[in-house]
Length: 137
Image 1 (cartoon, rainbow, N blue to C red):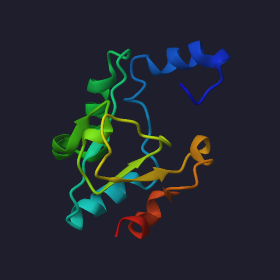
Image 2: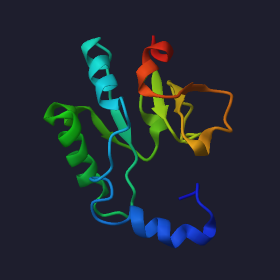
Image 3: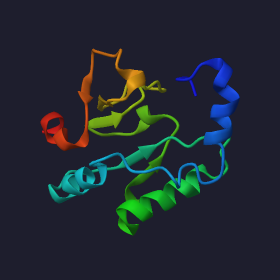
Image 4: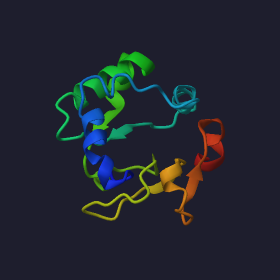
């Protein structure tokens, strides 16, 4: 919601707090293939996502989305965390420009390119899933 003008806040919230918002999101092009390739290459891959506290459907819909597009086994790789700095790892791929948390994270952030984060130039950037290996290896 921080990426939209204040005058649109109520409209934006009415959309992303609604039932089926998360369930009806389409996967980003190439993402499913990339995640499965990472697993095949023996990377330890976790899906770390922040729940929206005011969307009562959020957690269940995100689980259903993962099961629908990635399969039942990927539910074991799903982590819900408001504070992603607490999660251990080598990299965090996230579209949010700045990840704030309660500690300095172990991981290095790779920004997944989106129009609202293109002003950030001091971090690695993933412009699409086709070239993920160039940044991770």
